[in-house]
Length: 237
Image (tube, rainbow, N blue to C red; front, side):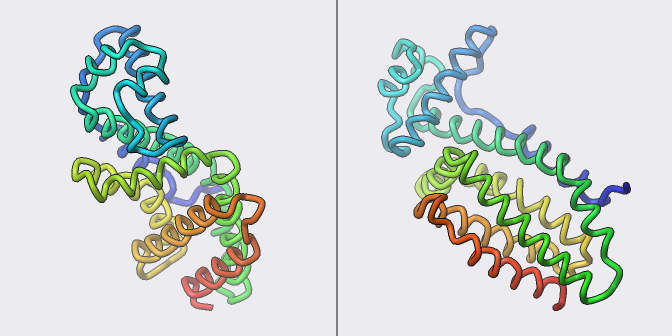
């Protein structure tokens, strides 16, 4: 089975984002030091999920990580460095996750694209299948990665107040958006980047609504109808 030619680029783009992430705090010089620094960042992440960014304080993080207070101030000179590096780690992990996602789905997407024969019926079937995959993606995110979505919302909100996070937000948005743009290019979209912006924005809105309402209240049928409508427009139906 041939692979869609653009999808390896989607994987590479996600990997590039992961490799581009830079941390602000003190670097760890030994493995044990790195483990402690990692424990501090993970603790800050858990606090953000439970209580929000404003609850991230050196003392609270030290207690959560079960390390001395002096450890948090050693690696992070102020709370802004700690918050920035927590979100930097979030972007790095998100990029690694999406690289694996694109790598794992490229055969399926190549198969879907390969069914196109120029007919309206084939395009309509493809629109339905992509819409169904997008709904499944949102459902899986809410079921398996709810904490990730909560942190994402906090991250975007904090970036409105903290200019140091804005480049990280831009990089984070590109992780999914670039891959979707590559896929739309394979489909023959005349405006793949714009189509990707619209689709990813729709998915993000659905994820946010799912966080508010809960997975059990998710309007999957309504989501599917919206996504089918959008894909029909993209494919000229």
